[in-house]
Image 1 (cartoon, protein in one colour):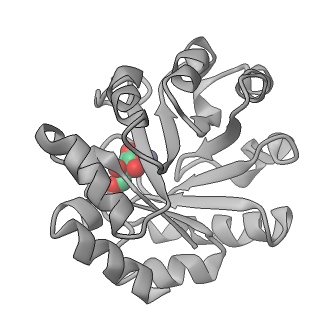
Image 2 (spheres, rainbow, N blue to C red; image 1 turned 180 degrees about the vertical axis):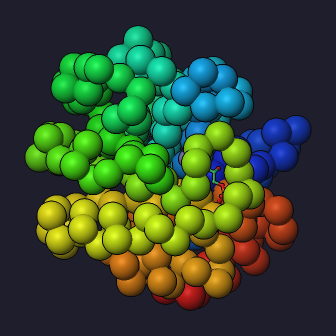
Image 3 (cartoon, rainbow, N blue to C red; image 1 turned 90 degrees about the horizontal axis):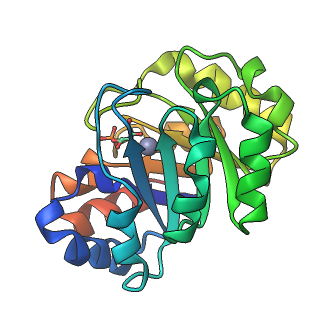
Length: 211
Ligand code: DX5
Ligand code: ZN
């Protein structure tokens, strides 16, 4: 399992320091939540924020775009140092174009679905993307509770995509439920508040120990 701590819950006044700590504690990925205030009710940060971290970190930059018409911005996010760019199937009418653009920029492409969106919505893209991100909260904020109703979608996607495909689960994951999320079929797990609201190193080690 890959742990992808979500920077959204970091203390932005100590971002460089905290991201170093995430890396030293043994996480491999860094989850970077970009919100535009339109696709989701909240605004977070843009490409320039993680661009300044790129040469200070060896973490795999896992950029989660919660923005409308992501095709407008994938180039900026790629150039800022993303390793994988994931966009929402609900946010664009041009999912194919988006995937092609991301790949043409030399990056991995992911597609995400909200808790209320059925697996059928992403099925046409499964053989074109490198990852599916299953939202287990309604996107917009860190610190929400895990929505159990998404569990059958994780199982279904694992069956559809085979053993090695990347399936990421995002929202409400903590020490008490990380093992069950992995058992359902997730192999990339996001944790925001469960990492940054406490001792970062201890929290990451605690989460990794559970699986
Ligand atoms: C929610 C974001 C998540 C969020 C996760 O819109 O996509 O990545 O930061 O935070 P926790 O782990 O606190 O639910
Ligand atoms: Zn996210």
